[in-house]
Amino acid sequence: MIRVRFDVLTLFPEMYSGYLGQSLLRRAIDRGLVDVQLHNIRDWTRDKHGMVDDRPYGGGPGMVLKVEPTVACVEAVRKMKETPGHLVVLTPSGQRLNQPLVEKLSQQQRLLLLCGRYEGFDQRVIDILQPEEISIGDYVLNGGEVASMVLIDAVVRLIPEVLGDERSSQEDSFSGTDRLLEHAHYTRPREFRGHRVPEILLSGNHPEISRWRHEQSLRRTQQNRSDLLDED
Ligand code: 6GU
Image (cartoon, rainbow, N blue to C red):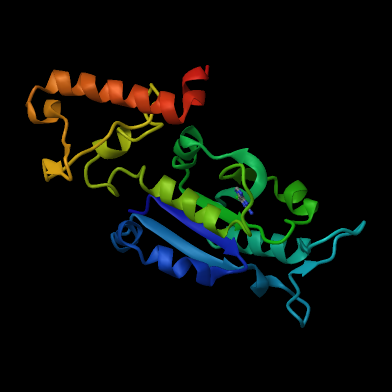
């Protein structure tokens, strides 16, 4: 049973082949848990040159993605299934993606991910389609494609059957009630270049191990992301 269907609307569908062929997502697609369909916005242009962008009214640098092909593409893709799907536009001016938002998005059966390029879309795309606008962080990418892969990746790993061991996504950084970074992990060998695995992890004393890991989480969060401790 398909848990989430993604429809990606982009000018660069070729950018996804490497990512979609990669192990965890590939397996989820092969097992029928996830479906990803790519749609090229250029296929919905009506003029003979296949023009998808144009110069901004009022002047200024860069190009703006045109309203007609974009709206036509979204409307056509919506009609491909019974459920119209939840429309997301990936744009640096959107709300910032975080784990609670990923969890909310993962409740959707169908997500339409519209990827911008250049200076963005004609504002009427937003006004007419009323998408949820999402950014993946405070920096600028050349387009929404990489951001959409980030979103897909984060959503897909919340599908219980996708990760082998269900606990592993619940114990991630930012999950659960105390939003702390994850503790350190170790595996064999016990010693490498004089760096030993902490003795406590070899003790078999699980209450003590839990306590130690929680302390590690706190210390890491203080060091790298003290903003997380100030929240609420
Ligand atoms: Cl979603 N798009 C672009 N172009 N840049 C970004 C972004 C999205 N999120 C952060 N930077």
